[in-house]
Length: 102
Image (tube, rainbow, N blue to C red; front, side, top):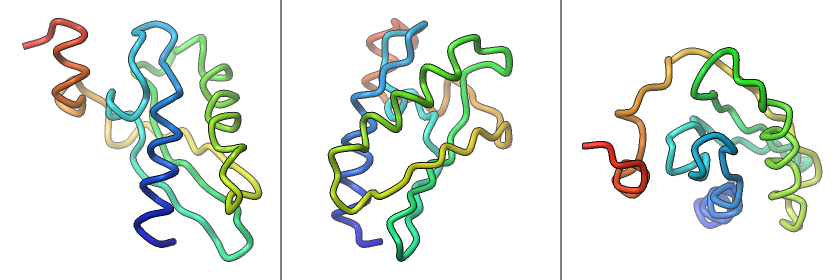
C-alpha cells in the first residue's frame, strides 16, 4: 500500500469518533496499524481506551462505514488488540488540548 492511500485511510478514520470521549480514534492514538492485501482487504489494528468498552461494536461499525467510500478498500477487518496497552501518552496534542489534559 502506498503512503498516499494510507494517509487517505487514516484521514477517513478521523471521522470515527469515540462516543465516550468525543474525539476521533486517530487523534486518541487508538489506531496502531493499517494494512491492505492485493485484493483490497484492509485490516485496521487498533485498541480501545478500556477492555470493557461497551461501545466496541459501534466503533467497529463506524470504521467500516468510514472506509466504504475509498475505492481501493474492498473489505474491512478490524483487529482489536490490547498490546501495547493504550495510554494518554498516545494521544495527539489536539486530543490532549480538547480533553484538557496536560
